Structure formats: structure tokens, C-alpha cells
Image (tube, rainbow, N blue to C red):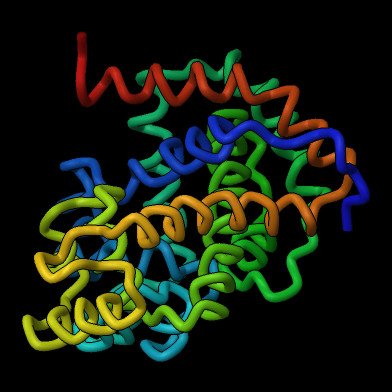
Length: 274
């Protein structure tokens, strides 16, 4: 556990890591990419590809580790996915999709030092209680620098995600409540309710629970205290992440922040060119 007080990882590091990982689940190609190995539908591709490092995960395990999805949505895809493709085949297909897109924005030469830096970061993470990060970290690193960079980035992204879920649980926020709060805060898609599979009744109940806590007003808008809490939640997530990193890992993250931010910006231009 880190003892560093003076050094703080800049917020752009975490945001860039997330952008460099999450695109693989959002690009238009994802909807059809996994058909080549037998998976059926975009949701099956998503749940199988993100959970594949866990092995042939049960729906209950996916629900637990992903946190924000309605259980019925997961059950529609898992465990059926594993009857169509092995986790190993899914992982190989995901890496092919990720680097095929990422390679349009980042060259292998640019990826090598980024991967080296993230390898130092990952080597200094305490993965206890962080299941998705630990599962990704258990995968063998490929020799290709672009593939290595993306996989290490995925470890760091899931590490922060695991820390964030731990805080949500500590605050008593279940999957639907966390999504309602994110939509109200403008931190996710306006149609997140349907994307995550929550019914109108479940969504309304989530809103009511947040109103009772004083975080939403009668119109479903964030209150001042709700805004303060949601902002604080991000800051506390970063603090928890750093608390379980070595000094060397924090230093490596700080040092690579600007370069990884530039890689994320280059990737974003593929989807929103100037």
C-alpha cells in the first residue's frame, strides 16, 4: 500500500485509461465482430468479452462484478455465450477488435513506451478485492506492443472500476440507484435506463430512494447535496485507487499521464474528427 502523500495521480490519467479501454465495447464494429466466433447479439458480445478473463463466468458472477446491469439482461447472454465460444476464443477476438481500432490512432512504436509505463503501474497494484482487475492481470501479456498496451490499460481501467464499485456498495447504492445518479449528473448516456435493462418501476424506485437521501429534487434533478456527493464519489475513488498502489506505481502513472492522454485524444478523433 502506498505511503505517498505528496504525489497524486492527475485525473486525466484515469479518464484517458477509461477511454482507451471502453471504446472496444462501444465501436459500431462490436455489434457484429463476435458473430465470427459464434456469439449472438451485441449484448452477448459485451458480457462475454468483458467477463472472459474470469473464465466461463456464471451470470451471477457477471452481475456481481459488473454491478450496474439488470440481472435479466445478463441472463439473456450468460451462460449461453460459453456454449457458442470458449473464453479463450472470446479474449482473442476482443484483442483483435481492440487493436484493430486502436492501431488507427496509435502506432506500435508509440505503444511500446506506453505499455512499459503501464506495466510498472500494474506491477504495483494491490488486487485484493478487485476481481475484474485481477482476472485481467492474470492474462499472459502478448509480445505485440499494441496488444500489450491495450491489455495493460484494461487492467488499470478495471482496477479503478472495482474500487468505484466498492465505494458504491459502502454508500448503499445498488445498480439501479447508481445509474439514476449518473444520468442525473450527466455522467452517462441519457438512455442509460434501457441500456442497462432497468424497468420503469425499478427506475422510479431508484429515483425515490435518491430523493429520500436528498440527492434528487421532485423533478428528478440533482440537488446541491447530490452534486457534491457525486463529485466527491469520483475524488474518493481516485483516493482509494492510490491507497492500494505502491509509490513506484503512482510515480509511473504520473509520468505517463500526458502521453496516455495524447493517445486517448488521438483515438477520440476517429469518432469525432475535427
